[in-house]
Image 1 (cartoon, one colour):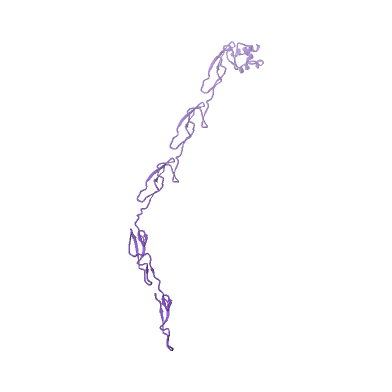
Image 2 (spheres, rainbow, N blue to C red; image 1 turned 60 degrees about the vertical axis):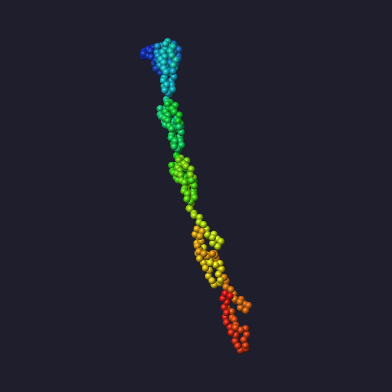
Length: 315
């Protein structure tokens, strides 16, 4: 009680009896022999005082107290005035100060978004060729990101090329295709313009080229010596198949024209006969050979044999 009385006297001298005194202030004005006394001991020794955290309140003194020392971002600190009345402190709030938490940031697709900042988000990070990226603006509010789109970027896919008859066709390119690769003589090629659009080729014609066959006129044939001769063909024809030795085969050229064969010779070949050998006194003398012949087979004594050379010519 001596320490408390001394405390009140000292506080009175400094005009602090009606003010809130912090523990540090008390230690500054209380002599050393009571400096180590706790606030609880002081209140116990002087029941009219009230203790609020590390603060002593005289009867009639008030202090601003808070429900919580820390409140979530965006909320207000709830306070009340607590008054000491002969050792009884009104109210129930227990915090001597109050502060608001800092706002939390957000995250989108692995990247931080600061509180209050906005970012453009997309439904998907890629869309097919010809489509468009759908976006929305998402705003971070204390860790909560508005909206629902989840991609930070979006890219429209490139158009795919096509293949026609083993050849690449670029997107947007047109080419001529045909219904058939060949048509009969006198006909015409049926064409179609086909285009490549993102990997799909319009139309249905399947050939890259078309050829009209040459017109061929079938002419009637001629017959010569039992053989069929095509139109425009020229043959050598003979008047006879065989001629005697020393004769010449009579030939002409005959032409087949639409079934009519010019000329008149009827044979496709001609043979000149071989020369005939000669007979002389039971001997055979070949054509072109000579033999010595005598006029008489015998002459009188003192006479002479008359001879000659005889030539065999085709018998």
